Length: 228
Image (cartoon, rainbow, N blue to C red):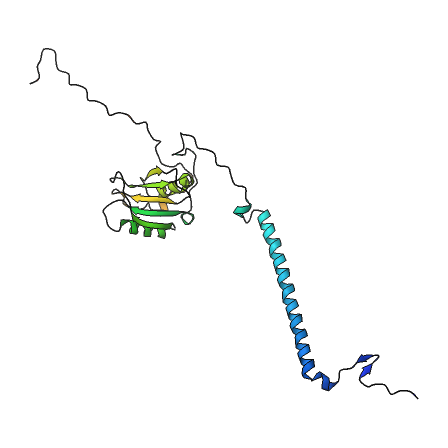
């Protein structure tokens, strides 16, 4: 006599009944599976996005659309000759104001001059660092701009914005930040529409050899006459 088959089995597989489907154990297991599925999907999406970002970055670096300083070869600095150590003879590129930094100092007794000038420079796009007072060996000048070897172009750029600035070279100064010290002959910035932004040379005069002061010559008198 044939055995009655189990209604909850089909070819050896258990058939989930309606009661089992609604049981808390089945619901918890189903939620856990859904969470695992969602988690795996998120991880896979992140991996694909990171891989795509890495490929795009590699392409941009390879085509020089993005330049990473750490990956670029560093130029070997040549020792400057005595002739151009303090005043380079090469043409320098005009630096965009937003890419350079200036310390503004007042070398006069006019209160607030450094602050007012710093405000004008900021409006023009320059980055301003320290603002304060300083001493000038010669006050009756427009002012002076000081830089190190890395700030030649920045100093030239500031000279284009303030006509008449003398240049002072500081061999120990590091970085491209320049110092502006204002003198008594300073009036105002150059009209922004009239600024020459083409490449040019730094306005400085090579140091001259020191000479002894000339002695006055004795006055000549006609022969036979006497000084009285």
